[in-house]
Structure formats: C-alpha cells, structure tokens
Length: 273
Ligand code: SF4
Image 1 (tube, rainbow, N blue to C red):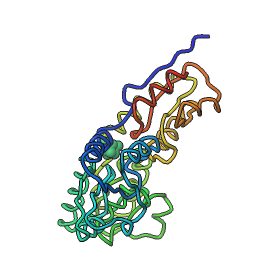
Image 2 (image 1 turned 60 degrees about the vertical axis):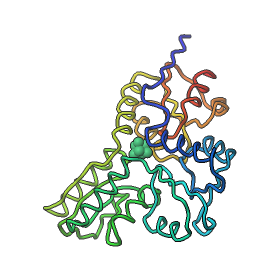
Image 3 (image 1 turned 180 degrees about the vertical axis):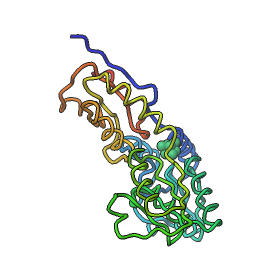
C-alpha cells in the first residue's frame, strides 16, 4: 500500500506562542519564583516542560506571593489582574502576543470614540477575558446566535472577534448584527496565521483520506480546525504518538497542528506513522 503522509507547511507554534515559550524559558534560567495564572499555552507537554524548569502555574491571583516574577501568557491578561499584580509588587514579564496587543489598543481607541464594543468569541477564553477588560462593563460578548435574541443594538457600535474563531461564525453573527442596526463598524480581528493554517489545511484535507491534527484537546484553535476539516474528510485530534494506537489510520494522510503544538511532536507522530 502506498502510505503517503503530507505535513502542512503552516504547522507547529504560531509566532505568538513561539515568543512566549522562548522568553519564558529565558526568564526561568535566570529567575526563581516565576508564576503564571492558567496554562501559558494550551499544550500539556510544553507546560510540563516549563514546570520542570521551575514555572509555577496557579489558578488564581491570591496564590501569587508578593515580589514574585509573573509571566503574562500569549493570550494576554485582564487589566484588573495586572493592576493587582503591580500592587503585590510583582515583576511583570509581558509576553502577550503582539497581534492581540494591537487588538487591545484598537479597543481602547474605539472606546475613546464612544463606540460600544461587541466581541464575537468565547467569554470563558482568556484572550476574550482580556478583551472584555479593555472594552469595559457595557461590552457585549456574542458566542452563539441565541446570544442575540431579544437584544437591541444601539449605534455607534464596533465589532471585533476572538483571534481563533471560525470565519463562517464571524460572518454569520456579523450579518445578524447588521440586521439589528443600520450603523455598525465591523473589524475582522481573526489572526492571519490561523487563517493561513486553515486555508492550507482545507486544501490538503480535500485530497486526503484523513487528517491528523496534532494538538491539545483543550486548545480552542485545534478544536476549531478539527470542526472545519471534518466538513471535508475524517479528522482526528491526537495529542501524542501513543494515541495513534487508538485510531484507524487511512492513507493518504495529512498532518497539521494547532498553534500551540511544538514541531518536534509533529515530527514524532510522522515518524511513528
Ligand atoms: S494564534 Fe495568532 S493571535 Fe493567537 S497567539 Fe498565535 S499569532 Fe498571536
């Protein structure tokens, strides 16, 4: 049997994750008492490695002692949390992805111009929580079509979105918002790297019997990628080489990954296949 395996050109860490992981490793080499709230990135292998270098991952700010070193993850952090950390005299190492920082500035700018901010995305995702903190209390978060039921949208309002959401969802909800008001500013803030990865994956998925998406099942961009690719072929999320044993392999096979998957894990899986 011809066991063809294709590996995506756009796979492995995205730019934001690469920087956050590299810089955190540097901090861990020179500092002690290094904390992070929640996982630095959504990949348990990488988190375990960083923990072994000394990173302390906590759930809540109350678990961070005074004068600690604090890592802001690629997703960013709510403004209020940052203020509390500064009160605790923590040294902040801000590794928020530059793309998301630009969205934070955009939100601040829109607010100055008196726009009500509408965020399309998952309100429980850390990236969206940081957006909400910049957008203020009257920001509206829309995650499902039903979130728009019985809601009046008064101008001026501006729409932005989570960097990893599905474009179809962004377009569908934006359209519904347009139907609710005549004056609305819609800004597509989906990350260009996520889009490039999805476009390439769709093209290759159409010519494959199955796709393996290497990534963590907690990662939002990995789950979205799987959902999109399942429209074209069989798609399985695999977090390590052992998991390959549990699934039926069909060729030709296409390998891609979420934005927080290290390249060496993809290579390991390709080798095992
Ligand atoms: S997916 Fe895009 S926006 Fe998110 S961390 Fe990576 S580069 Fe930044």
